[in-house]
Structure formats: C-alpha cells, structure tokens
Length: 201
Image 1: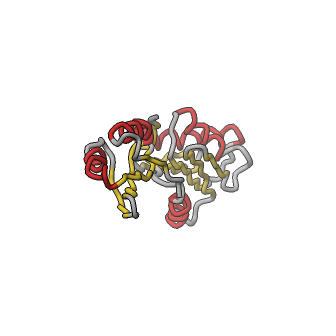
Image 2: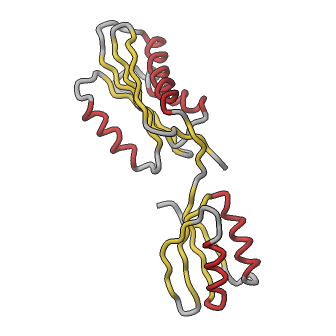
C-alpha cells in the first residue's frame, strides 16, 4: 500500500485582516519527531499569539487549537490533511494577532488555508511503508537465503546473529513485499526458513 506524504518541509505566509498566518508542513519519518519539530517552531516564533498544529501518522491523528476557540484551528487543519489524503505529515500554523477578530468561521478558513498553502509549496510524494523483520535460516540454506535477500528489491540487511542451528537475519523492506518474500523463502528452503515481522518500536 502506498500513502501520500509531504515531499519536503515547506513554509508559507499570508496576511489576513492584519494577522500574520505562517503555515508549515513536514514529512514524518517517525512519530517521535513531532515533539521536537513543535518545540523548534515555538523557539522560532516566541512572540506569536498562537501555535496551532495537526498531524496524521497512520492510525494516529492529533491536533491542537493553540489557545484559539475550540474547533477553529486544529480541527480545520487536520481536515485539510484528510481531504488531501496526506499521511505521515505534521502541519502547523503560527498566528501573530493583528488586532482584528476573525470570528469562528474566519479562523477556520485562515488556519485551513495556511495548511493548504504549505502543502502546495511542499508538494506530495508516494511513500511505501517499510517494516523490520527477522529471517530464520538453517545453516544448510544460508547461502541460498542470503542470495535471495541480497537480490530482493529495496531490502536492506541488518544484523546477523548465529544460533546453534542457523542464523537470524534482521531485514528492512517495503511492507507490501513481506508476504512475497515469505513465500519465496519457504519455496527456496523447502519451508525450513521463515520470516517474521517485528513490532514497531
């Protein structure tokens, strides 16, 4: 399965009835990156009136109105990510208040537009989720298994551990390739090698 994500970090700015709205997006390689990016953003804009954000990472979706009235900032920002079909992406909009209140509808439009502009500037790209897995290979099939792994498109081999009866090889590969590799391993070793996905850390 392929997903769409922001192709690169991007920032845009617009003036709405005197208030500056600075919208940014970042592609996310891991969920843990969100906190650091938001901390850095607040450091760049310590005098801003509001720091609002939304992100989508697989099944995890979160947003914050950053002190704006509930439902006027974070939710409209998340809706843009959802409508655009963008995943693994963090969006943030910083507002410098210009003295004129925009009302709930005006705020929702301004924050949503801030994300849309930043996404347009970043553009999007296809991304194939990757997972880590372990391959058990009896010594009698070691050469055959390593040749198969070395020739598998996009697969990256990691650590190799030696056990009494064989090897455990850690690999990283595109998630949709997992079942195909499992089948080929069984076929090449008379079902004596196996592949198991590792839980996300």
